[in-house]
Image (tube, rainbow, N blue to C red):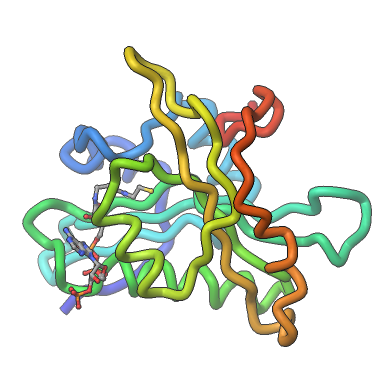
Length: 182
Ligand SMILES: CC(C)(COP(=O)(O)OP(=O)(O)OC[C@H]1O[C@@H](n2cnc3c(N)ncnc32)[C@H](O)[C@@H]1OP(=O)(O)O)[C@@H](O)C(=O)NCCC(=O)NCCS
């Protein structure tokens, strides 16, 4: 049975097998450390019965503007070991992440994914996420790749007001709006 626990600093020495997946977002060490320090409750590990790290999620929670009604969460990275996929582990991690945000009265949760990442797209659609917009050339490379920006209202947003931001337009983000914002 899979268990969830807090992602800890020494997990960073154990997760190479997970982050070598080409679709897993990898950040520099300072980014991980800052997130673990600022939002430890939003950094969660999934472990197998033998203690092996088989997946993780981490993200952040912030106000986009000074208005506190804009408090929302953002998933920075989600991954599950190839040997443990299609066992609902990602769904479990995503639901737990949303639950923690609910406890903070956050209005919605959002995330970015590569447009080519069909597995993740199906996962997020199954969980109730909506396409908000397309981020042109968001992922660097040759060629660059567009990202889907998806969001889901949380419990406090009973009328789905945050969904009114789901314009579905295509935009090019400034570096200030990127996930890697430190
Ligand atoms: C995407 C990923 C996180 C899914 O993890 P997972 O634990 O296998 O997902 P779940 O078992 O919770 O899947 C839930 C649902 O998502 C959809 N789904 C997940 N993986 C899928 C796949 N490979 N093909 C089609 N649908 C898929 C299915 O609807 C699935 O439900 P089902 O198994 O009852 O059909 C995993 O494949 C992964 O780590 N990929 C590499 C990293 C990545 O892409 N991260 C997301 C970046 S934004």
